[in-house]
Image (tube, rainbow, N blue to C red):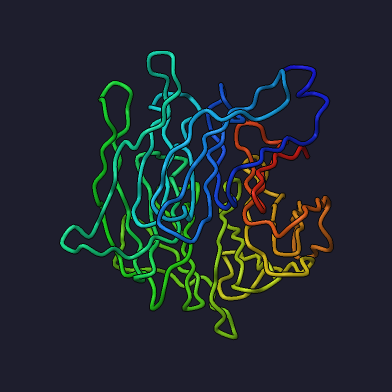
Length: 338
């Protein structure tokens, strides 16, 4: 690692449009590679793939691609061993997989496959989010405003050419729009949140049934969910237009294990540390990004705080470089050293 990397605690890239979703690469060879999506309220949107030039100490554009509508989520294939093509997925109108490569010495990012589960209609129900199974990267689950979750089977191997995908199952998961979903570190378990104010847990081995883990007592829609990959008994959930983060223990359903209220505005994003069962990051409209230490029910104040210059849209913890987190706000993407 260069002296610049050792010295700097923040890297910033300014995009030519408002930023929203982004994702870090899982690849150990390019741990600071990211894809950042625009948020423009029209059909034509963009994604920039960025690489960090460690000598210059700044991000450089690898490639720019067109994307229909803003991306609701971006996530790279969880393939730290580099056994599969370098792909990232996006949701918006459809689920798309994009391939990042070099061709004839030039950087190139192109759509690998578009996955549509409603081929009999010219209309599509927007996808609100998705999660890529980090234990088994052949599985993605997407969520939609049409109350469904769709589980996709993927084949993406370097030796087999183009990636392909097919529907494994579609389930009517909730009574209203489904806003977010998260896989456990168990290959078969995922959990979703909805405008119907419930958290529901599913098992791929028995999709006829689901378990209600939590129901918000005032029937407030639930917006985001994060699963603790080091201790999957714990979930973190946010409510729409709320400053609260609700901590859940699935062994004691329906009763919050703890509630964190340090944000002074709505919480937009929450994620557990990929390497620690006791740490969580959150970001919100109050321009704050927090790091929390979660031990038992007595969670007082965040242990670290960062002030952005505008409401923060998303925060993600790098899986390949776990002492860094990234955020988006205004037209900026920043990476912060912890």
